[in-house]
Length: 112
Image 1: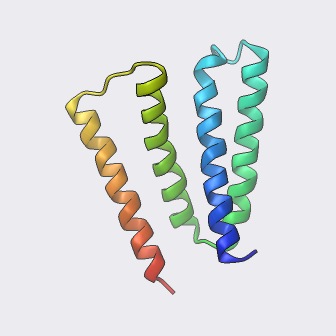
Image 2: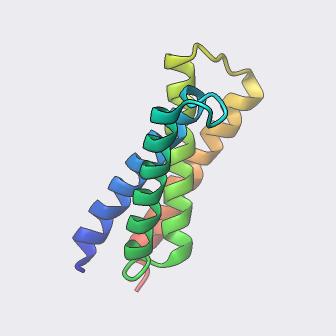
């Protein structure tokens, strides 16, 4: 796998993880069959993709980006789809996650 493919797979893994997490609420505690099946499939795809990505991109960088970007995206989905309102300290926490992801990514680009 090339580095470009690994980055594409990481983005796809993040998308699958976001999809799975977004379906958690719709599954109503894993009691609704279709949302449950879809979320399990999304998580399985995410894990399979991340397993491939870590053969090229270091594990720490992969996980930091996967979890950080996924977290920020799910917070945005919660705000838009479920009308969840964040207080100031929660917004600061999300902003720090974004800063951390940017710093990890910038450092990762210069590492050998």
